[in-house]
Image 1: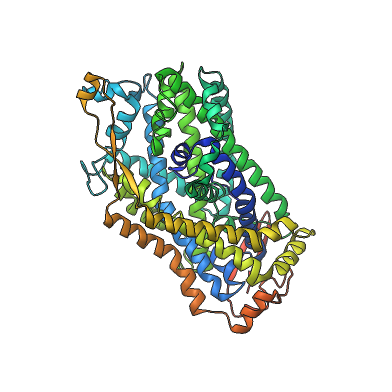
Image 2: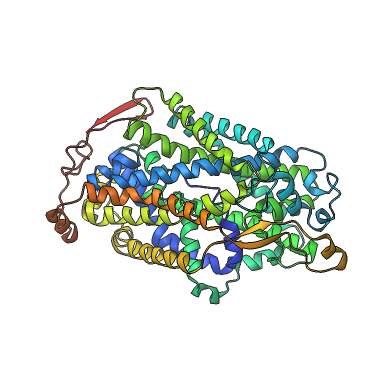
Length: 556
């Protein structure tokens, strides 16, 4: 199993805009009623059916193959843009090696605007070289970002090319070292002046904001990213687990560790934000810069600490490890169904297949290196294919297990694997609470997207006269996302969700099967040697998984 430790690039910005204290309440509710049950579903299905996201759902019923294909498409979109965030982090690691990092001053420019907000100015003008809108390429390709993007993909490839062997070895370091960094930053952050104000903002809820649907939608999206739900990675990794592994225990342990990590990271960040607020004399809202929070607010706070190069390197190297662990987890979720389930690479070596995918994704990712790249990532790719489609996939997964496979058959499968029954909490959530809750959230999301066209912040630089006269200084302005961009976003959403509908219609269930689903009377032969289920005898798959020195070949 593999939790996504570095969440959506926009996650902290959404949290700040919605009030962090208010956000924690729906986050915990969504975690209990939606996140953990769906995580349990994905890990259990992968371990039981011994396949990637495509084959595992197909083995329940051929009409469910579209779920795995949707997960595959979503993961492809995520692989394409997420590695660009890692490239930004590598950029900051490189410049943080200097005795005085350039973002800590304005020696590289004579622009008066830099003196107003050094880290924000550096982020937009030197790192992103941001243009004036999503349709403006600015000064063209940033070759520095191309270089760091190349390094990020090379590291990702080295972590994945040998399959679960290399991924597992990389995980030992990538998933444990960040905790050392987090505790270093936690100790330093809590000892900074103003840290208490930041923590007060984090844990003091504004209950009035709980009435806003956006808060709950954002919490649900954050859960999907945090636990890596709907991407197919959990199904793929779980398929390599021993059949008799205690999947119930693993689900609870991973969920608890993941939530602990999120709260720990929140405490670190808000203690540093409190310090920045104390140093600048501005409110927390004013010192937090949306999607650039990590690269602006936190960077400035670190630059004001004693021993800036050390703490800057620790912070960004931690982010690099978290980002890479998430990226190679997602890429493995793409490779497993393509290589093992769909077999589109034939008998080619997996190393060559991973290399081919990496080169293709790298080539597409070059679209993020010009001046409009950050808008494409934060306002298009991070907003459309990995939000609503994840809801659709997780709804389909809950219905597939709770009703099509049947919650009683699922219970028998859990008993066969673990020797213990499926907890009642999971049964109720999977069959009733989780799908109903997610359907309501999906409806809310559709209404919000129709009623409120998406807006995005465009970098315009400041007006030097505002600084001289003491007026309010602004570096960005809010604009409505162009129609063309919204149409492209809608196309991405359709591409990520259509396979569910296509296979549901093409390989549709008979009227008799639908009645059995409603009554809960569908029959499957449950057991380690017959785990295909007697309803899908026509599925032909040859899947090989290695556990230690034993090799188990499962043909169906």
